[in-house]
Image 1 (cartoon, rainbow, N blue to C red):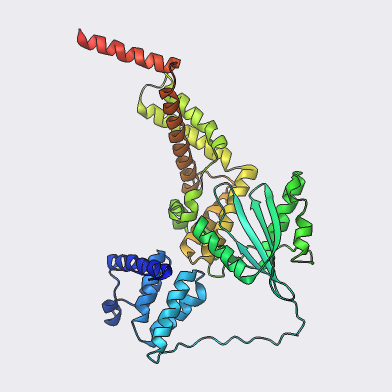
Image 2: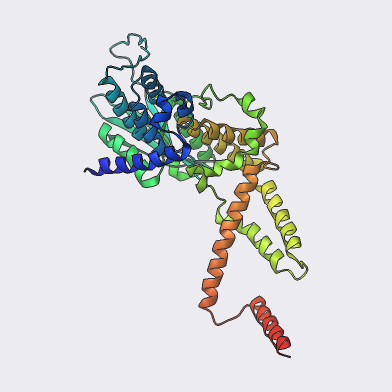
Length: 409
């Protein structure tokens, strides 16, 4: 069995187990105790379950199942799900069931009409970096490729251009998925061009020499000036509806369940400032019990939220979350997209403050916990290799000895 077939069978087996746990099976669909609408609501909850759902629909030979598969195919960017959908549609076609597909009216295009570029973007990581691509078909074949790393709030960090074959570009997209675990989603090219240009202007204003070659790199792909572009959210996600739904903000901690958000942490330098304050509070002889320590820790956390999610940095986090909403929408996660947008809009409404926003407090708490754990591990490793005791360690040792002596009397 080929590696790809083995991987598919493994994913299908995993997905079928999940469907069994959810109470979803072919018998339920055939008896109509499970509706096709309820099946589509399961799409996007787990990649393996998506494959199993697509395979299940292929075993239900009805026009409704075929139309459900076609609608799914038009929306999803997941290549593995698309392949399984194609297999199921082929299986249904062998039984004489062919879905209706919308016929697009394509206007006649002049022979020498310019070819539109394509734009792609990655999710934003915890440091605020994202990868943005522009590609355009070359005369005579191949692609001109422009890539940039854009940081929020620092702007463009890296830029490069190259000539690629179509296969080379496809391989590069797949490599991003297999090696780094994220998908480069297709976005309007004008928006990607705007992200690059704006990032370049910010970096240029800070005097970063690394981006000096950007105009020359861009000229290989585009010759017209970049234009402002709006955030490409789908029409199904309305800002007013998101703002008026308090449940989205209240459940914003669920964003950390998304794989891309699990990489969001404060950097060590920023977190160290607050972990030091917590450590001092824990070691202070003036704080006698754990309730006082918890109060002091909450004071430090509140201070961190106030300082981190304010001013320029607060604006950067709001924009990161707006971009994340676009990414989630493009990868068929509408609820996650709405939550990310709800946090961004709440921060803007609070003058870029994170106060009272569960997501912001969660980000601070999990970051400080991680860095405190790492610092404690480093201290233990250093203590094991050192013969010199710190004053606090010596005092703790002496207290232990004295208590032991009293216990022996």
